[in-house]
Amino acid sequence: YLVNGGIYHYDLWRTLYLIVCPQYLEENNPEYDVLAVSGYCWTKQNLRIPANGAVTYESPLNATVPVVYGLLYPQTAAQTLCPEGWHLPMVEEVAALYTNPAITLRSTEGWVNGDINTNSTDFTAYPAGFYIANTQRFEGLGSETYWWTTGENGATAGNAIEILYYCDAPIFVTRNANDKLSVRCVKENVWPY
Image (cartoon, rainbow, N blue to C red; front, top):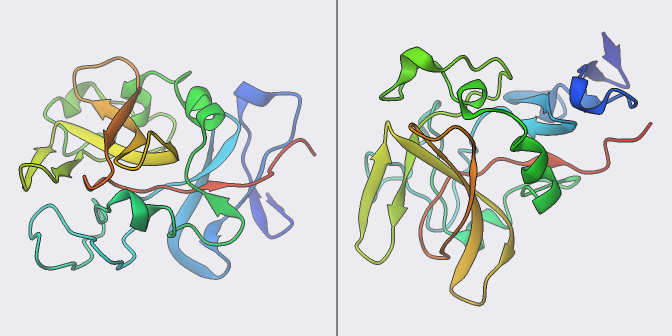
């Protein structure tokens, strides 16, 4: 069903409220789909918006835009990417995401253990890996993924969500602010209605 230009997304986690998510991150731009997960509207894909310091896993000097893994961003760039009405995930949104087992969030392809992942939430977390600033190398392609969240831990560190191939749940971690991680956005004020 369409409601206020968006698709009805029924989410059992918040059964007392109607969650109305727009169909896309930006109106009439089907590049980024949106889905309801644990009571919040999340972008379904990692962002791939060119920005200062953005890289791909495959080529650190070339910010081409791969469709599946998106781009990896330093924290300062990540904080400016979500359009108006959207933001990096906050602590309570991450906590709600943690109610889902990792196998229900991970894509069924690309992971070293892809055969056990169900992606039943349709969150489609691809194992995009990350870039470590201190050693200037990439790690984790096929085995882990990170997304920046709101909040800083001083001038040199930031908060992130991590999903590993061998863990049962997402993990809340602190990363060097110059490391490069994936970005997903969450819609502001979607409930209660």
